[in-house]
Amino acid sequence: MTRPPERVIDVGLQAERTYLAWTRTGLTFAATAVLLLRRAALGELWLLVFGVPAAVILARAQWRYRVTVAKVKQGRSAAAPRLVAAIAAACAVVAVGGLASVLFTR
Image (cartoon, rainbow, N blue to C red):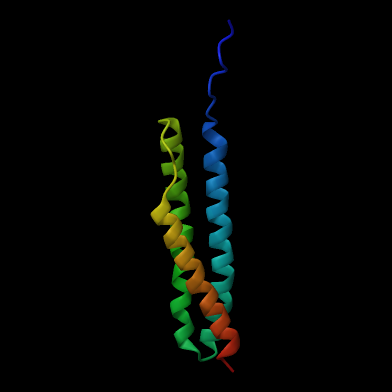
């Protein structure tokens, strides 16, 4: 009788992928924020509001990486449904800001 293979948990790669995804999202937000800040410097100050999510995402990326590593090492799920909803909302805010900067500025 053969034993079933043991479940192997790769502690490093899941957290690395999560960190890279957060970083990519944050960098995309930052690039959009830079464009919005440029427009704000030209007199469209209301566009400053849309740059905030970029800073939040970049700040949370490192924290989320550490949380993911800790949870995977403990054998727990690293899923965070509320966090996914928050990131989706931040993406929507940044997208609306980018669209507004194109449509409603000089």
